[in-house]
Amino acid sequence: MTHRSWMRSQGFTTEVFDGRPVIGIATTWSELAPCNVHLHRVAESVKRGVWQAGGFPLEFPTMALGETLLRPTAMLYRNLLAMEAEELFRANPLDGVVLLSGCDKTTPGLLMAASSVDLPAIMVTGGPKLNGKYQGTDVGSGTAVWRWEEDLLAGRMTQEECFFAEGCMSRSDGHCMTMGTASTMASAAEALGMQLPYSAAWPAVDSRRYETAQRAGQVIVDLVNSDLTPSKIMTREAFENAIRVNAAIGGSTNAAIHLLAIAGRLGVPLSLDDFDALAADVPTLVNLQPSGQYLMEDFCYAGGLPAVMRELGGLLHGDAITVTGRTVAENVADAPCWNRDVIHAMDAPLQPAGTGTAVLRGNLAPDGAVIKQSAASPHLLKHRGPALVFDSPEAYYAVVADPDLDADENTVLVIRYCGPKGYPGMPEVANVPLPKKLLNRGVRDMVRICDGRMSGTAYGTVVLHVSPEAAAGGALALVRTGDWITLDVPSRALTLEVPDEELARRRAEWTAPPPAAARGWTRLFTDHVLQADTGADLDFLIGASGHEVGRDSH
Ligand code: FES
Image (cartoon, rainbow, N blue to C red; front, side, top):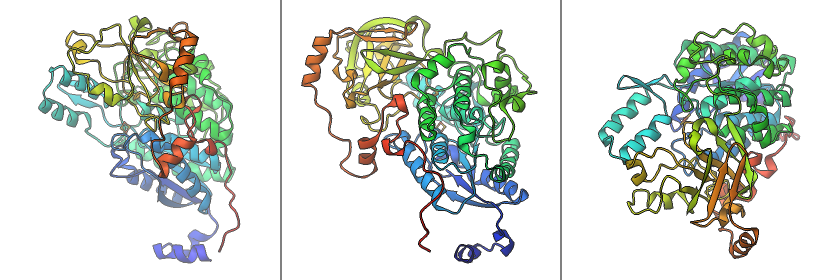
């Protein structure tokens, strides 16, 4: 009676309290998260579907993580969103939840929460922006900005031209429309079976985005009635599907961190090495920036993710169950492909198998590091060069335009103290622009090594997620300018050519930096965050607690 009486203030008629499923709609809407700003309209479509199917929808806010505005990085708050949403899902009297996400961290954050509560759940991502259009060509969000930044630095573009170009890039609602992290994680959610087929690719402003949202509202009521929970959908087989799909779409390296974190909540055994091993026989099929040419709108018109999954055929676990109540194989059995230049066939791939995310090991990254081969320069995948070391991206930016910087195209730029504890939050800073003097000479890529991340929209020969990170005492902290480093991607090796005895001597001299904050969330985060190779979750958030709570004080 207490629940009902107070809810009556919203003007609900009494029959909605007749025991029908109560469906929470967790939205990450905010004007501070521009990629998610339309989610309140998506929520209205979800509500239509819930009412249609005999449920009772209630929308509520969860942390909106806007990738571009949050300081020092939205990644510092992914686990906070996951923790907040988990508690909201459990503490409120909900029978099922619809997860509305879009910008990069909101998709994994909500999936982590749903995994730890294991209420029936379905994801509805907000969809990508329409293609950017600038000077007669398509431009991708993120990817184009990195290029313009270099052009601005090199004097090939004026500031006014940059302002104009930005407007041309961001011309509709939606998340980044390259195959960046948002599109990657939307695709991962679909490949995992947690969102409806085609959901990842409908543009944010396409009426079918809203139609799919309405359908999701109907489906969540079915999921509650059949008790089909996230742990029954996101099995080891589902994660293997997501990893293989990620390789086929040329997905972001961030997928490794997020999928490992979600698997950790579910108790699904998954390791960083799975990303290399499972992708080894998967060619890149999808021709999207930053690895390829096109954008998400083109991907949608070409057939979207179901066309890719159908093409992958036997490489996927076709019998994995999804939110539709049907299997992956059933969902994609008739999925057409309308454009083979956007979605390539297995016998004529965009890039051959084994050119996706590679996992590197060696004395510089004993617990692993990753490199996105499809975004790298082929001639740099085997490279030996002297290190030029910076203890922060800011230290590098202070000298990036110095004409006397001691660097050439063989130099290996090391940017460190950017890991989960170090920065803190593991920002996307690894793809620092090249030194201005090299850009002026026409050099467009060089090897960079970092314990931070790289935007999924970025490109370059960049070794990422070095684990353990420098701030946790990883060998990266021991590198000195002038040390020689060998990168050998075909052999999956990353080697610091310094004898063990010398490294031991340097380690004895090394002192850990003080915590990044004395109190608050940042202190809790840096005290408990795990390393990138296991998903950078907090140690006390691993696993699940179900959806039962203690006795209500009422
Ligand atoms: Fe939000 Fe790229 S900034 S998806």
